[in-house]
View 1 (spheres, rainbow, N blue to C red):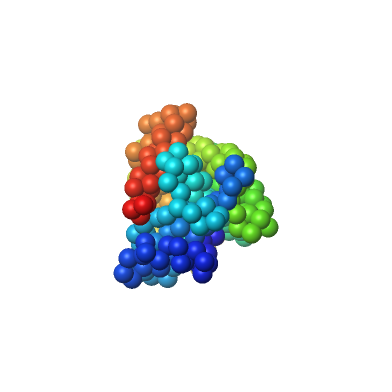
View 2 (view 1 turned 45 degrees about the horizontal axis):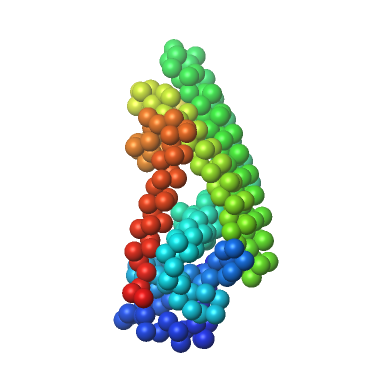
Length: 275
């Protein structure tokens, strides 16, 4: 959690501010020593939105960190804290947590969509049945991913109990779960990609069949086709989002992600204010 800068720290860093900026900091512990990872920001458009303008790293005694190897380690922990736990970041892992009602609602939507698929199969559309197992498995993986996020939320409580200091020990545990979540997500994407050649035809068939139902007389089946259309459209959006990694296997994907994270961490160090 990024916090306001303490007064004594404010005095040390005041010469590093640029016009219109504010600063926030998180506390990082590496090899038993605590550091302050400071962000200089400008307000952006929208609630809680800001533009990162610079960073600075301080020791617990407010001395500027200058050692390049140490800077990289602190930034690595900072990066993963933001990616996993920062609730101000809508793309962080914990921000994607779904409560039980959301998970149950998606499972219910999936079951209704399967009813529509079975109707299409009975109507002579054989490829409809191919998607049934995909929808079932994707719903299961969604629940599995959410359970992993629950494990991260337990670790988040430990960070709070430690006065919001993110330690290298907690990082090891959190990073392991983080990568498990990435693997689960990748497995879901690959499943969705299995039958992508059928999605357009299925959507056309769904829309045509939906129009044939009287809303009041065939409400259950009408709703089932609405749910199926929603899930198919959702699957298409997922494939568009992950288009660049669809041809990778899981191990290659994980190497790609790890290398990408290393690049981002090194790039973030370029934001350090002139020492």
